Length: 123
Image 1 (cartoon, one colour):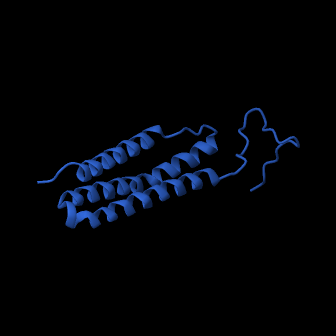
Image 2 (cartoon, one colour):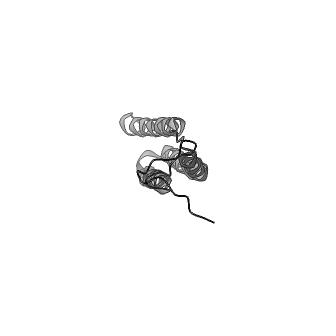
Image 3 (cartoon, helix red, strand yellow):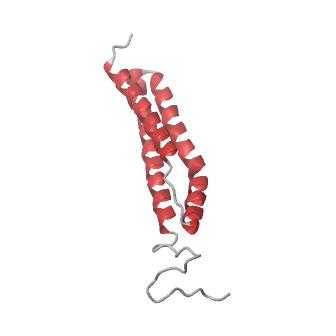
C-alpha cells in the first residue's frame, strides 16, 4: 500500500477530503465523555439506595431509573463511536442532539422525582 501525498501547503486535492488534524481522537474523546456520564449516573443510582431506610421503596425506583439511563448510554456507545468515526472519514460529522436531549430529560425527571421524594411529606 502506498501512502497518499498531500500538497506541500497541506490542502487536499479537489476531489478528496483531507484527513482530520487529529485522526481518531474526536470519537475517543466523545466516548470518554459519555463514559464519564454513564459512571456518574450509575454512582448516583447506587447512592439512592442509601435513602431506602428513610424514604422506603420509592428509592428503589429511583435507583432502577438511574441504572436504566446508564444502561441505555452503554448500549448506544458502539453505534455512536462507529457513526463518528465514519463521519470523520467522510468529512460530514454531525452532532447527536437526540441522545443529549433524551439523557438530559431522563436525568431531569430523575432529579424531580428525588426532590419530590425528599420534600413532600410521606405517610
